[in-house]
Length: 438
Image (cartoon, rainbow, N blue to C red; front, side, top):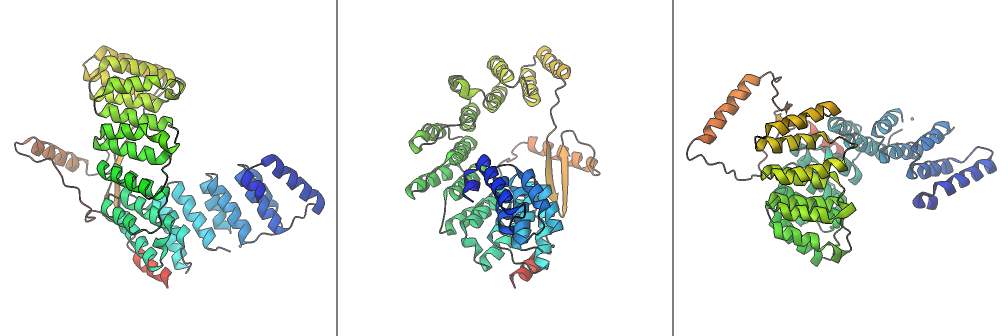
């Protein structure tokens, strides 16, 4: 175990060779399991699986160790496949399967596994809830999330700091920021991740002032912020227009021993760019030296140049951006530069950039959006006309556009935590949770 924690592969191999020699290749089960852990932690998951495959005897620990090794190394589908082949399954096995599907984005499969787990009278634990909550998507997942929260309360699992943090994240992503805040306030134990998750939720909902207040409370509570905390806080200031406050947060990082990364630089450049302080953002990016050789920094600045119609500066920014990312193509940023020229009606340069993209074979992947209506998810892409109700949708959009242009139309909308428009495909989840709680 000590070798595993040190991730000293060379020493681990020496120990493996010694054990193999001394035991004439017949290693005890407990040592085989320990070797699987060691190889997986050292990034040699294929060696771990080869050892697992050759084991003459396996127990539940062997299966769970190998499944966890796959999941922890990003091989989620391999982990799920192995779960389906396991002689016996315990809670650890089910948790690994749920985590594997969730991490690979297969949220429906993760939920299906949870239902099956409950049907087989396996009781979920804190790890189960932490694994399944990310599968509650912003579109229709709030009902399932609340049912999971209810189960956690009945089982006193909501007192677990990791479960509480996962609930805050789930509510924030589903647009239920007041529920997230209520969950946060009710937690007794809070760590850096808990505070950072709540900070991020406030920022995503444009509540920068609340994020700053919470940051002050975090410091008063003696909880030390890390690099991710500052990313969340600066981004929250950016989305709320709190420019000077965001810059002050950025400049205070050294007080906490946090070294600024390209992600922090990108956030503060975006902060300044959104506020129209483009020259200041440009000078900051230039002054970073080698630390500024990051496409995200210059891409944020280029986007700001487009918004504020700064074509001349945009050209300089684009030159630096394409120099940094010339090996990767950066098709999206070429399109952005083209849009900068288009905003100025500089069609010659628009054609030039587009021609360069064609010659280099660059193509931007189109973006898409989803909406949940009832039990169905509908996906749309730009200029999409493939939806079966396409004519009705466009007719509605034209009507809304005309209405918004009419005199006296109020475009302000009050944010609401009501989930009356949310729905979920997990209508049978409540009874299953009740079954799992018995």
